[in-house]
Amino acid sequence: MVKLAPSILSADFANLLDDVKKVENAGVEYLHIDIMDGHFVPNISFGPIVMNALKGKTKLVFDVHLMIENPDNYIEEFVKAGADIITVHVETCTHLHRTIQKIKSYGIKAGVSLNPATSVFTIEEILPELDMVLLMSVNPGFGGQSFIESTFEKIKKVRTLITRENLDIDIEVDGGINPSNVKMVVDSGANVIVAGSAIFKAENINERVMEFRKNVL
Ligand SMILES: O=C(CO)[C@H](O)[C@H](O)COP(=O)(O)O
Ligand SMILES: [Co+2]
View: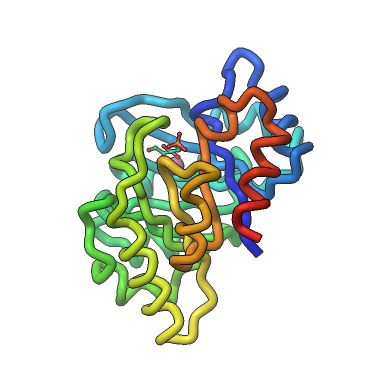
């Protein structure tokens, strides 16, 4: 079953909990939480304090996407703020195996994300340790960008690696996904769909979530 993960980057921060409740009531599974540091990506979003404010107020799975340098230094803080899944970028981790073990030592799920220009073969060795692979379909840093078409082939490559090794790993795709292209993303092998602007900027969030669902059934 395909899971939907609305990214709060496109939510109304003056009414954040209201927006979170809207997507929860619309029946999505995850809340995608984009953490940006202004170093790894050219934008600053927010930190664990905002996550902490939502902790305990929603049943949604906290899917934390760390777009920060030196992620090891902040993992514990994000766990305390309620993270259920923490994904780090392969481009930020010199000792990726150690970072993944650290995330898993807190009893939560661990993911690795790849920028559009990063080869899937950079994660071949770490794959058996992972719960999720997050493929960026835009260059990270901003919501509302256009989907990079070469991602379809990349999703297929990761799905082939996972199947070949007989592993049970989610493939999440992030950036520029909307009701028109979601079917191709899922048909390529993804099973967790991030959508920020397409969901939070919709006039009617319930209807937009239904549109997503209808197109991947
Ligand atoms: O990680 C991200 C950007 O770095 C966001 O999750 C992504 O951009 C989602 O927003 P949209 O669906 O509007 O593209
Ligand atoms: Co993201």
